[in-house]
Image 1 (cartoon, each protein chain N blue to C red):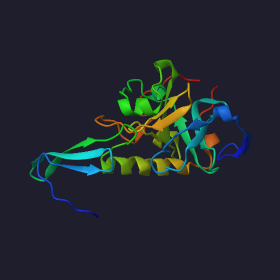
Image 2 (cartoon, chains in turn brown, red; image 1 turned 120 degrees about the vertical axis):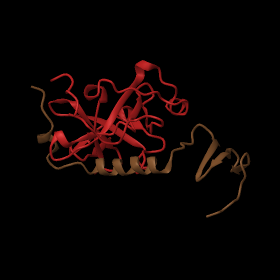
Image 3 (cartoon, chains in turn green, cyan; image 1 turned 30 degrees about the vertical axis):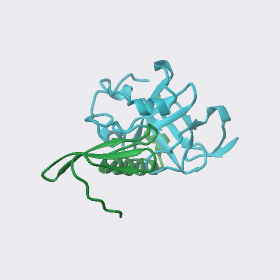
Image 4 (spheres, one colour; image 1 turned 90 degrees about the vertical axis):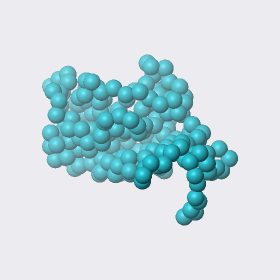
Length: 73
Length: 147
């Protein structure tokens, strides 16, 4: 992993169109500002992993689905 | 075209029925084409079936049937990637994690599937700054309309 040291207000440029700025640092919390093209999705990592996990779980499905789901009477 | 499906066996789908997810969905980045298949005698649930991977099918539902107060705002970037759909062309679905019984089954309200029915583009949008989670019991609230 590339490691760079930055101060508050300083930025990192990733490729042509992604800019990451350190907005503030308080204790062990870092506030980051991100400028990126709209087609780039940006998420907190743990949230993204959580969605990934839920999708994987949901994809397993179950064998007796048709029996389980209520029919419209 | 003919496709093999997880729950419906081999079926024929029209190419105009295919929904395109340009970036797949989280965990399934390579899955860019799905079709929405109805379930026999059941209008509450559908299957979001991968066109390419026969064993990949998600049980989905209209979340507003089960969660009447479900409410969120779509971010600009997502709207743009869907081709700026007008309100009437937007369809919202939630992926269900189906358990042994429906009472234990949950809906992912944190990451709804948003479809633009006009251009048939879809995206699973991860809501930020909302209190919704990935597991909401679908029958925790009074059920919506009955058959």
